[in-house]
Image 1 (tube, each protein chain N blue to C red):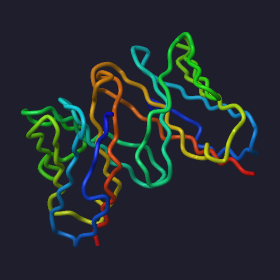
Image 2 (image 1 turned 180 degrees about the vertical axis):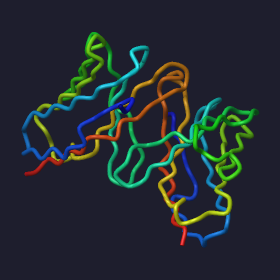
Image 3 (image 1 turned 135 degrees about the horizontal axis):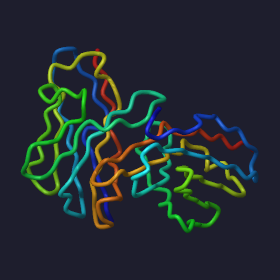
Length: 109
Length: 116
C-alpha cells in the first residue's frame, strides 16, 4: 500500500461545478497535511494546509479526518484556471514529507 | 518572500557527462533543502535532504556517488548528476524550508534534464 494515495483522475468538470478530491495516508502518526497545486511542467505550489478543524480559503475547503486517515479538498465554483494537478502531501514528522501522485483536474468552458 | 530559484531551468547533455544544478533561497536562509525527482505523470520522489555544512541524507535507492549534493551555505545547495545516462532524464526540483517553519516547503521552478 502506498503511503499516500490519491485518485489520479482526470476529473473533467464544467466551469462553475463543485469538485472534491480525497486522499488517504497510511501512517497514523503523520503530523502535518497539505494540498499543493502543480501546473504542467512547473513546480508545486502550496495551496493550503489542512487542519482537523477544517480550513477554508475562498472557494477551497480542506478537511482532515484523522480517525479514517483521509484528507479532502473541495473546490466550489470551478474556474478554468483551476485546471491543474492537485497533490496531497503528508508530513510524518521531521522532514519526512510524502507526496501523493496527484489528481488531475480539467475545468472546461 | 520565500523565493527559491534553480539554475539552469533546462539542460540537455550527452550521456556520460556531469550536470550541476543550483538551488538558491533568494530572500531567506534555508538550513534545510530538499532534492526531488519527478518522472512524467508520477509523483515527486524525495532524493535527499541537505543541511548546511553537513553531509546530505539520501533516500533508499538513491546513489550518493551518482547524485552529489553540496550545501555550502545557508542559501545555496547544488546537485551534481555524475556520468549522466538517459534514464536520469527527469524533472529535478529543489525545495527549502523557510520562515513558516519546517513543515512548509518552498519549491524552486525545477530543472528539466534530458540526457541524450
